Length: 264
Ligand SMILES: Nc1ncnc2c1ncn2[C@@H]1O[C@H](COP(=O)(O)OP(=O)(O)OP(=O)(O)O)[C@@H](O)[C@H]1O
Ligand SMILES: [Mg+2]
Image 1 (cartoon, rainbow, N blue to C red):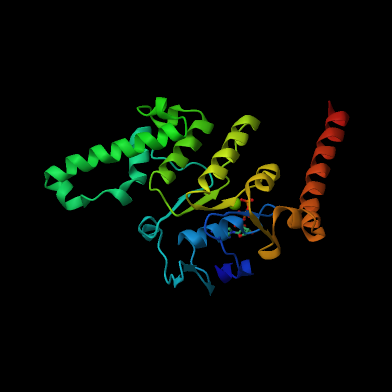
Image 2 (spheres, helix red, strand yellow):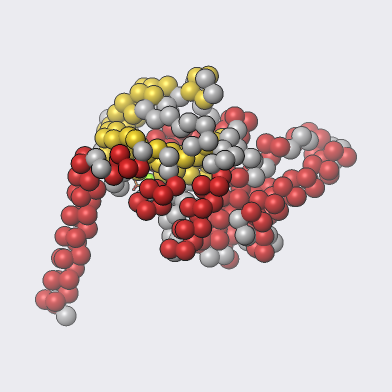
């Protein structure tokens, strides 16, 4: 993505941001709340159309990118939150992600041609494998709503992986995860990078620093730093951007504490 700008109702959410995910690399996208991370992520998914800038994938410019094109392009994503279909079982949810590899298509499925049956079997098998890879195969027949949040997140990841993408886009995959689950996620993302490139939007700094090859830092819609984890960590602009966040949090905590002392 190069020179990407986005405005929502006249307010600039992104100004002239550029970011390249190299083959086989994990690229982190970080920044304080409201920095524009999800907006840039949504531009990469075709959910938000930039007012300026270019998106290039494998040397070709993608004009008017639509989310429905992603799977054919070899791109898969998980969104902030979970976004599973409540009315489908876990296995069926993952099968939805595998349709890039289905040969039958709707027509033969509708006509109940023999290939559709075979493809359904293949899809099921692929989806099952993806669930195994994420250690979620025991939930295959359950419905997402009945499962703990971390399991739902794993299912969402399985749904993205089952398409065997060349680029995986992840928006806050670690949110709501406990320490050990986060560690496992880190190992998984590292392992995935031998098969695909990853764009990782994430708040958890230790995870980002551990798994990313390169990091882009946004603050108030502007790109304030980019480089290796070590370079980014050593950048005073980055510390400053995050300090602002922490100061606010500390103030809030302090306020709550003194307030509590006063009124209780
Ligand atoms: N659909 C929208 N309409 C209007 N403003 C929006 C919209 N989406 C995002 N914004 C604004 O754009 C800015 C960037 O938001 P964005 O969600 O991209 O930030 P973020 O870095 O993902 O934040 P977070 O860490 O909270 O997820 C914010 O000021 C936000 O309020
Ligand atoms: Mg976000």
